Amino acid sequence: MTNSSAKTRDAISGLILVARPLWPVLRRIGDLLSRRGYSVETAATWRGLLDGPGTREGFAAALLGEYGAVAEEEEILRRFRDAGGPGVPVFLVGGQSAVRRTRRFREAGADMVFAADLPEEEILNRAQPLLAYRKMYWNAVLVGRELSDLAMMDGLTGLPDRRRFSLDLDRCAETARRIGRPLSCIVIDIDDFRRVNETHGPEVGDSVIRQFGGVLTRAKRSYDTVARLGGDEFVWLLLGADRDEAMRAAERAQGLVSGSVFNGTHAPVRVTATFGVASLSPGGEWDANVLVENADRALYWGKESGKNVVRFYPPGKEVDVA
Image 1 (cartoon, rainbow, N blue to C red):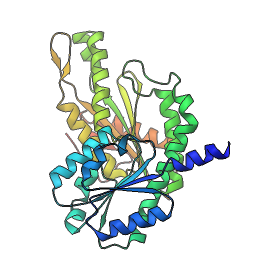
Image 2: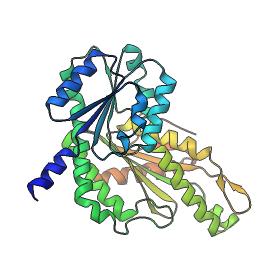
Image 3: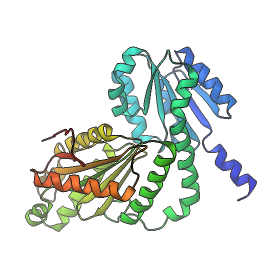
Image 4: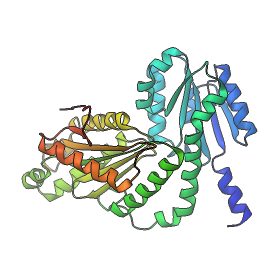
């Protein structure tokens, strides 16, 4: 690799957006990151997330100053995650009220929420693994961009196929292991899909599968992987999400599926789905294939226990979603 290529890759992770820096610690963090070689831009409002940086490959992270308009903040985060670049970590800094709402902000799209009275060095140390992941992500994109242009996409849904998923699984597992973050997998299967084909015909069945893939795409974070394994079975990889976060993501997607109307040829079609969830944690036994096998076990357990549920394997404290 030439020196110019190496410099290009080092610069890929260069831009940090600091939006609404009401809290002094945000300015200090920006100064530290600038001294570390990042390009730091500021924006007066969170809407700066939606005005361009999210479309740039060099967008490394966003630091947001929480200002109390929670509904507006959540909407901006969701819109950014829907339209922004993949793998961009979002860090939110605010008062104790923001910390108490950590779960809501995480579900909307923030990766970490920090109290504004923490030292800037502590915040950066805790955020650094996700910054490192972002850089590795774009390095992998540059190295593998030619490969990604090959036909490893499912022709019906436009999602990655089984071969692409296998590559993404290896990449995500190695990245999670190196940066000490959890990795979760969700395997999803449409309930009683054969009945859809028998009742409405295979053309409608294909339409339902295509639209179902769209529902999962809307449910995932922009940097997650959702792939079609074949038939009516899908898989979802969540880097940095632990057991509880993956369960909440599956529950949210299950609700979207149950509430969706899939357009058939002559009549609307409704379906449900069963979700099997498994996770790997830092410091534990690390086997990506076992991760997928456990998610499969959870899926079959869900099918046997009534369908239209979310199950985790190995079973422990169970969140039952009927």
